[in-house]
Amino acid sequence: MKIHVYLRVIFLLINLSILQISYSQNSREWISDVMVNDSVYLINSSNSDTPFNISISVNGDPAYSVGLAWFSNPQIKNGEVLFVEKDKPWDNATVIKGAGENKWFNYLNSRHNEIVNKTLLPINENREYICFKAKIDNLKPATQYKYKVRNERAESHTGYFKTASLDDNLNFIYLTDFQLYNLDSYNKVEVSLRNAVSSVKEPSFILITGDFVDSPDNIYAEWEWEHFFARFKDILMNNIIVPVLGNHDRNLSNNFFYHFNTDDSFNMTSSVKTETSGTNYCFPIGNSVFFILNYNDYNKRGYFDELKKWLDKKVEENEDKKWRIAAFHRNMYTGGMHQSDSDQKAIRENMSKWFDDNKIDFAIQGHDHVYEVIGPVDNINKKLLKDNIKDLTYCPEEISASNMKGTKNGIFDMSEGTIYFLNNSVGNKRYNAIPESIMKSNYNMHLVEDYWSLLTGRFGQNNKSIYSNINIESDSIRVDSYSVNSVENADHFDKFSLFKSSIQNDISQNRVSPIKIIENILYVDNNLPSYIYVFDNLGKLINRTYSDNLNLNLYKNRLIYIKIENDKFLESLSVMVK
Image (cartoon, rainbow, N blue to C red; front, side, top):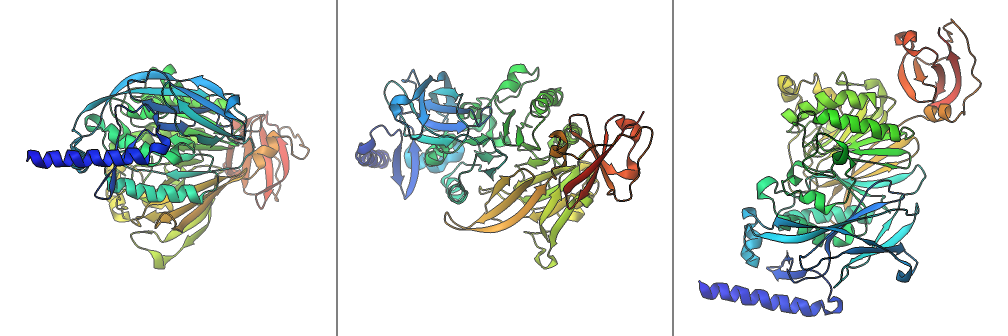
């Protein structure tokens, strides 16, 4: 037995020596790749000086700032970031000192026998790290920068990022639910992530809606994070990440917080704090504002009240943005196996009215591992706004587990309601979509009448990894989803669009025809459409309703009738009501 162990140790040392020679051209590389049975296992040597686990995240307005996070081993006491515009020499670089904190994390757990058996690393070993963060501010919009992280002994490779432009257009990659814990799961995610990054030209950021790793709570393993950052170092050092906390990312050591440098103003001001800091944050970009939400703390007393109070301030700060987009892990609406979970019921009960009052157009989710397009949903009444849907393709011949309603594509009018979207997962786990009969029989658990009708676009389980390319323009959002076959190949799986006419902008920017004031009279024009749009003095849309449903007394001194043809503004008529 001892001879067997000795031989394995000798084999390991030989491989490490060979790899050390192979890395001689870059002696500051922080990892040693140990080849065992054609699989690569990452070992973070306690003697390594080079910074590792480097990430670049949204932190504030991405046109002007980014947040960096990285780890060092405990013998390193200092860390700093150098950055400069891409085409300028390093001599012109700005240097920002990182703030470091000592942390101990459990490295491997009993689920990692595959790694333990082939590397001889111990289970439940606590390792010490220095976790650094630095925020880069005062950047130029639409500018490419280069950067590197260094300390008193070594420096990282060079990474690159581009700040957001100030125009309305942007595109980003959306993926969810990696749940990384063994080599097979990393291989699976790598195929999708590399396909997405190579296929989507210059994404503004990569949105990942939670469950990066798989071992939460007291069985968590820092190795899962470390391997993630090592395997995808070239991607993570060259793309801005928008990270969302998943239930599997949650543990008392808060690894998630130390791996990403996001805005933490919520916990700084809230009386009910999130267990994991930096997981409620907001950022404007172009004509959109994104709200990144943490629903893991849904059962804390007063949490939703504090969350909505904070969100109200963020809405006020970004009231000029046309598109309001929320991203979170635990679902508000889903046709998957978590449909009747208590957390989803609590989330809907507490957040539906806020979503409706603040006109959240698009909600991007995770957690339930199916593909689904839901809505537009009237959040308060939990009903489908069926008149806001057009060009939905119905293919009864395609009805199957991968397309349970036989519908796909679709164009959605977002003058009211919210679209809820989930694009399956890119990891190994897949859940079955729930049929209509079970949704009906489970009404007493989920309390959504006719849940089946809310699922409007493509819905089902195709048992493949999916990523989405989301393009935002001034008046529309287009979503293209791809089913991945290999790093080089993916099939176009689904597309749908959200649109808003430019009426509100026309009003707020004074691009309207002359307004005629009529006192004490309800002006009737047979040429007006059945819908009436109501704006306040600042041009903010207050209501959109049928003319015969409008209560004039609710809108004294601020009524504007809009005549529309083919979604284009034609003329307006204001009615003054005493």
